[in-house]
Image (cartoon, rainbow, N blue to C red; front, side, top):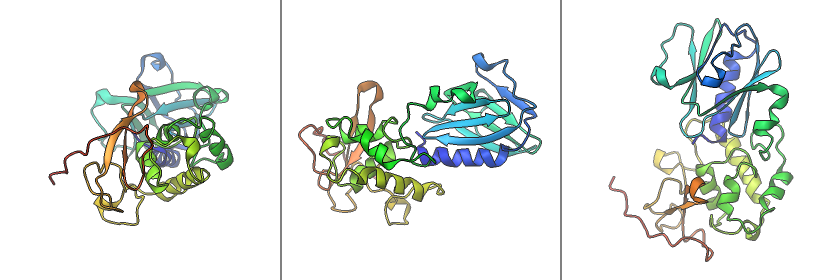
Length: 276
């Protein structure tokens, strides 16, 4: 799933392409919006809010989209061939005289009054890459349920807006805390939102996400996606397990040596090492 830094870059790319320009084409390919037409309206701005995208247009309207697992927005120059996927995956087309923005595989697409945006993003916690970032409020939300496992609390968009599986695993490793540690038992808990902010800020302009000091492609992340491989810090095998309620479970990665586990952690078996 795209994380906050990816969505932030998408918003910037759409803003640079559309803001201040009049829409000459609008095609929203979801049944409830089939008759909606924003042609003739000027795009005022495109902003991200956590993992949500808000395209605000003249007349007090906002086109709200969310990428979820594999959605994407692509921008093409006028006359350029669209290459983001087959036509049946296109959910939105916003065109100007200069370019066209095409939304592929968008699971969430809504048109609402700009004044009603709180209906879709009002529940979110402080945005790690937004102008409303508030470290104190993020910490308050993180500790509001002290018995909740740290990984689940960090992944909850109502705590901090913008963290996904990659950053949650990497953040827990950098904090030397098990993802199953109750959030209220985290030493120096103020470091969690502070470090999360630093990680996203450092990566918001990168296409290849990096949380380590290494430049090699296989050394850019500490633990995420590295189950069965040696920990780059201590050499012990990195593990993975699903975390969270069944309907919302996500795979979490951790080093059992660098991140000592509480009794509530799963006793995952070490997976076989990779063959390549």
